[in-house]
Amino acid sequence: MKGDLKMKEVKIIGESLSNMPWQDRPKGKCDPVWRYTENPIINRNPIKGVSRIFNSAVMPYDNKFVGVLRAEPINGRPLLHLGWSENGVDWEIEEEGIDFIDEDGKPYQPRYAYDPRLVKVEDTYYIMWCTDFFGPTIGMAKTKDFKTFVRLENPFLPFNRNGVLFPRKINGNFILLSRPSDSGHTPFGDIFLSESKDLKFWGKHRHVMSKGGNGWWQSMKIGGGAVPIETSEGWLLFYHGVVNTCNGYVYSMGAAILDIDEPSKVKYRSGNFILTPEKWYEEKGFVDNVVFPCATLHDADTGRIAIYYGAADTYVGVAFTNVKDIVNYVIDTHEAIEGDQHLGRI
Ligand code: BMA
Image 1: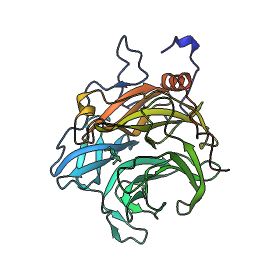
Image 2: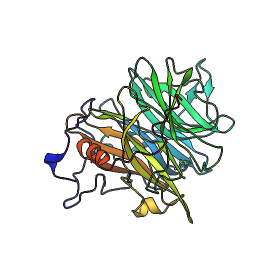
Image 3: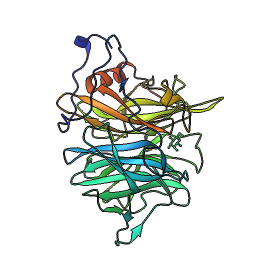
Image 4: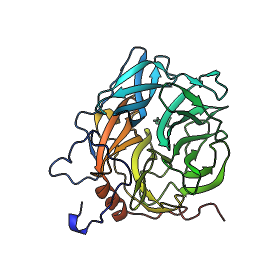
C-alpha cells in the first residue's frame, strides 16, 4: 500500500461490530487482503451426512453470528443449513437443512439450493440462493427469527445466479444484483441490477459491470459476491471473476465501488484480483482453484472487514481487509472496462 498520508479517508456507514473476527495484516506484507491464519474455518465432513460446506453467508444476529451455509450432503445435491457462532470462526452447524414454508404457510423445500447470500433490510432478514425453477435461477426467502423461513415469489426467470440484495432500499426500492446465466457452467456473464417496490415485481433492469478488461482473471465471467458495504466512497462490492484455462475455470476475487445513489454506475473497479487461489484449500478440492466470496462482517468503528469465501467448493475461508486500504487500492488500480458505461438505458 502507498504511504498512509496519501490515502483517502474512507468510512463504513453502518453499525459497530466489535466482536467480529480479526487479525492484523501480517508484518511486512502490503497486500490489500490477507487470509486468516487458521483457514479453513469449516473443514471437510463437518457434520453427519454432509461432506462439504463452502460458498456460505454469515451475519451478526442476537450478539452472535448466524450462517446460512451451502451444504453438500453425501448425495451431492446442495441444500442450505443454519450455523451458529460466538466468534465468527468456530461454527455449530445444524444437522437438519432449513425448512421453508411458502407464503400460504405450506411446507416448501427447494429441489436444490446453493450459493446463499444473507442480508437484513429494515427489520427482516432475506436469503437469496440459486434454486431450481426449470433450471437454475434466483430463489428468495425471508425470516425475522431464523426459525420460520418464508419463501418469496420467484424474482426472476431462468437462468440466473448470484442474486445479491442491497442492505437498504434506494429511492424507495429494493435493489438486487444478479448474473443472467445458462443452465450449465455458464461460460459468459456480466453483473446486472434490478429494482422492486415489493420484492414481487422486478424491473428497471440495468447493466452494471462487464467481464473482460486488460487483466485476464475476469475475462470469462463475473458475478456479484458479498452484500455491498455502504461506505463514504460508494457501495463496496466484493465479487468473483473467472478465467478459463487448460485445466478449467479459475475463480478469483475482485472489488468495485458503485455509486451510492445509482449503484448501476461503477465508480471504480480494481483491474487486479484481490485474492486468487494460492493456498492448498483454495487450489485443491471438489473443484480446484476457486475462491468465491459470499459475505462480509464489518465494523463501522474500526473499518475492519472480514470476507467469507468458499474455497475449492470444499471449505470456508476468511480473509481480512480494512475499508480505507481496500477502497484506496480499488481507486489506485481502477480500470474502466468497456461496457460498464452502457447501463442499458440506450
Ligand atoms: C459456479 C457455482 C459455484 C461454484 C463455482 C465453481 O457456477 O456453481 O457454486 O463455486 O461454479 O465450481
